Structures are given as structure tokens and as C-alpha cells.
Length: 282
Image 1 (cartoon, one colour):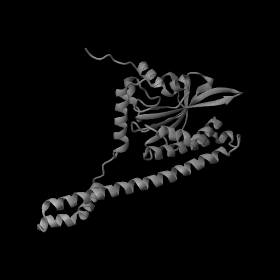
Image 2: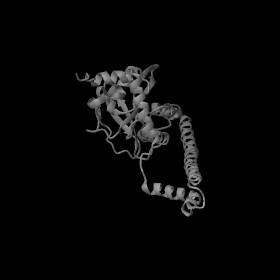
Image 3: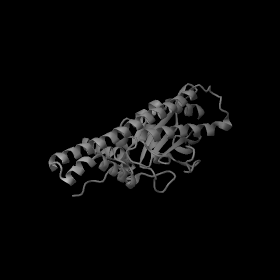
Image 4: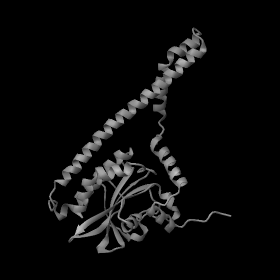
């Protein structure tokens, strides 16, 4: 007997409530490890470069084997040790360089976010609001790129707001600079996971892979989504002393599992000043 098919609504509800069994969580962990820790591209020339350097490092014991000046066993042992040590050195060098660069870039973006908080309310004119919002989305894009170890074009940041005080209709208000996906389109919020997150408990949520929702998942502007993972950040503001959900920020990546683990938390915590500025602007 075939396994029962899980419909789209059931998948969405399970995502909102976080009701996943241990097997699903283990599978997500494994896939996230593969996608985030393994190289996304294989560069042949770089691999050949490393291989030649490794051969040079191991040239002494290899020469000894060729000229039969020492027994094969100890020479091979020395060659293997040198080869492993060389690879370990390259790895530590790469990780160390990335860590320093990431820390510097993150610090720069955080300080710029802190600068935004010094802007008094009303300092941006109505005519400048859209440009200011797009600039904030651009900052979120840069931080997300750095956090997910992605390249320019891999991340898209969008601001989706409820249209005309509607509780269901939504409009794609703005996107990060350089993003050519359409804006200004009004759509039914019922089909957006961000709307569902806003209505459920207004908490940030990660979609590790849109494929987890089956064929029922649709993009509001594309027949086939170009992204694989999404980080949804609902925006709740205070209007006349009352809390009001205005919409959400969507950070999506063309790679699955891009926001797995602590990455989403880092973006929320470090980019809080930028998100607060967006709330002020809307």
C-alpha cells in the first residue's frame, strides 16, 4: 500500500508548529551539513595547484623511493604524514582568513546599523522613504551574504506589506538594490508563507527547502521559484498605542539550507537596528 500523501496545508501547519519527527530533523541536519560545509563549486585549476604543491612537499621521500635509497615503508609513511600536514595547513589558513574577514565585515555592517538608530524619526522625507528602505534591504543582503558564505546575486531581500490596511492582500513594496525581480504587485497573502507566519505568532521562521512543501508551494512573482530557502521576518509596529503587523521581510537564497543552525539568529540579533529602521520607515 502506498504511503498517504501529505497535502500542502498539513505541511504548512507542521512548519508553523515545528512538528517534525527525529528522522526529518536528522535528514535536514545531514543535508545542511553537505550544502553548507562542502565546496559549492569544484575548481579544477585550484585542485591541480594544490596537488602540485603537495607533490613538491612530498618530493623528498618520493625521490628516496624512486632511487631506492631507503625502504619503501618508512618513505611512504613520511610522504603520507607530509601530505596530510600540508592539507591541514591549507585548511587552517583558509579558515583563519575567512574568520578574520567575516568578523571585520560583520562589525562594519553592525556599526552602520547602529548609525541608523541615531536618525531621528521624520529625518527621512516621504520622497526619500523608498530609497531609504531599499538601502536597508541592501544592508540586510550584505549581512546575509556574509553570514551564509554566498556570493552577490545568491541572496534576495524583499519587503512585503499588507495593502490598504487589508488583513489578507499583500504588495511587494521593495527589494534590495540591483534586484530585478518585480515590485508593486499585489497578491493574495493566503499563498505566502510569510503571511502565515505573521498570522500564526509573528515570529521569525526559516524555510530550509521549499521542496519540503511539495508542489503546493508557489512564488507570487515567478512561475518557478529561483530560490530554495527563505528566512521570514515579520514586522510588527506600534500605531496609536496598538501593536499592528505591517508585513514581513523575506530573505531568500538560491541555495537550500542557507539559514540552517545559528545563521538566522545571527541575522536577527546583529541586524536589529536595520530592521527597526525599516519599521520606522513604513
